[in-house]
Amino acid sequence: MTASKAHDDAPAGHVCVGAVAGAYGVRGEVRLKSFCAEPAAIADYAPLVAADGRSFSVTLIRPLKDGYAARLSGVSTREQAEALRGLRLYAPRERLPSLPEDEFYHADLIGLEVVSVGGAPLGRVIAVHDHGAGDFLEIAGPGLTHTALLPFTREAAPTVDLAAGRIVADPPEGVFPARGDGADAAHGADDAGAGGDAPDALDARDGGDGA
Image (cartoon, rainbow, N blue to C red; front, top):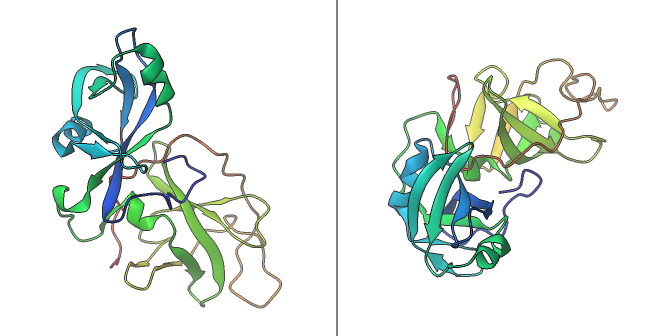
């Protein structure tokens, strides 16, 4: 899941659980990023599929910084492994564990409309980032010269309504530019910076009401 994509190419009924970051070694191993809450669990959800329908079994070899050295079925040379760089891997939703209340899969958050507590449209979620101090929703939309980062907390995102496809936000000052149309105003726009791949597996807020 690149951070700037809404992952519209995800197979129906699937959740992105990892991505290939490149080749590792000369025998076809890959560098595999896991987006699962328990990183090693990615192998438990295999076979994993790509958006183009290819299917891969997964064998984890050893942990690496930010991922694993892994073998994917049908990949036996460095050239084949390198050709998969950036490939996103998906697992059927029914294989994934059920989530407690107020926890969400990143894939379910990406693409949701974001509105203010007064109902004014703010944009859509295009990525979820973890910068070490909790999750942030990256939001793009009309009127934003830069994407905005909204803390994914109970205070800043009090309502997540998956059925309605929207998040009601009460953003801290400075997250969104001041609006001149009478809608709820926040001030300033921070450059979100495109960051790295967003995790698409388990995500939990630090509390809050969510659907």
